[in-house]
Image 1: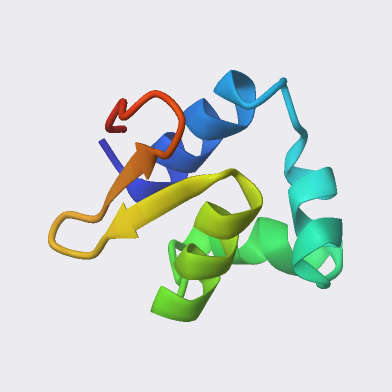
Image 2: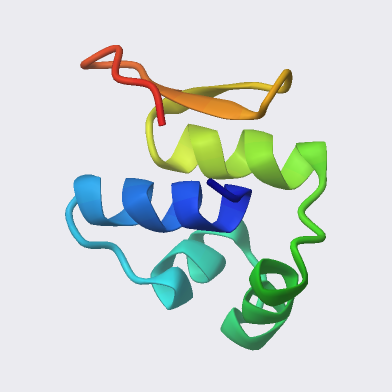
Length: 74
């Protein structure tokens, strides 16, 4: 599963948040975030920020997101 797929799963599980809303919360334009998602060029800093917004932690081995409240790994 790609990192983009994992992020999309998290968006659904965290209340069906759109990619555009996530981009706004990250402080970037939705178009720029869309380009990053399409290219897969998300930095570790991007992943940490996404995890924080979605109440997760991120493990950079795979990377894996772990939901802080449920412990579920995606």
